[in-house]
Length: 208
Image 1 (spheres, rainbow, N blue to C red):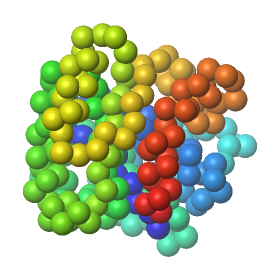
Image 2 (tube, helix red, strand yellow; image 1 turned 90 degrees about the vertical axis):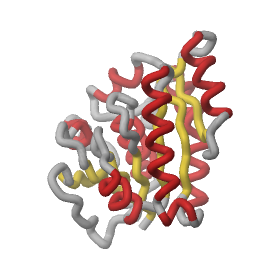
Image 3 (tube, rainbow, N blue to C red; image 1 turned 120 degrees about the vertical axis):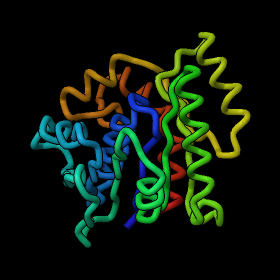
């Protein structure tokens, strides 16, 4: 089983959007997929309730109180981390993960929080010994804006790879309301945004 943790200590960074998209990508490949929702808001589980019955199945695991175990039949597990992770949470979740995906939004507060989170990550033994894959994702970017330009400078200072850059668009909340994602979208606009996910999906394919 490949386990992917999506998290940051900064709330509102888009981790649930990233988590649900990765789950749809895995499920579309015919892989038995589950989402472990560790957030008290249970956003991923609520998204699953809106999912069409004809869509590729994704198992929802309510881990909002305690992290459990995925069924042995699961091939891909996506963990939607809690909004505020303490050091013990970081260590515990990394302990059951193969890949850690860190979404980052433009803005000074998000960059400061991410820098703090990456420092926490680097202190975890499994990360120090390069036993975990760390992937930074630029999220809700608006090319040409001062905030996005500042984020590019921030990325250049990191010691971790920036794998994908995702533009801001209303297509994401619109499809989330349907329990879907741009990776399942059939129109040209969805396919255009889906291209931005390719580097991350390629990395996960190699990790699996």
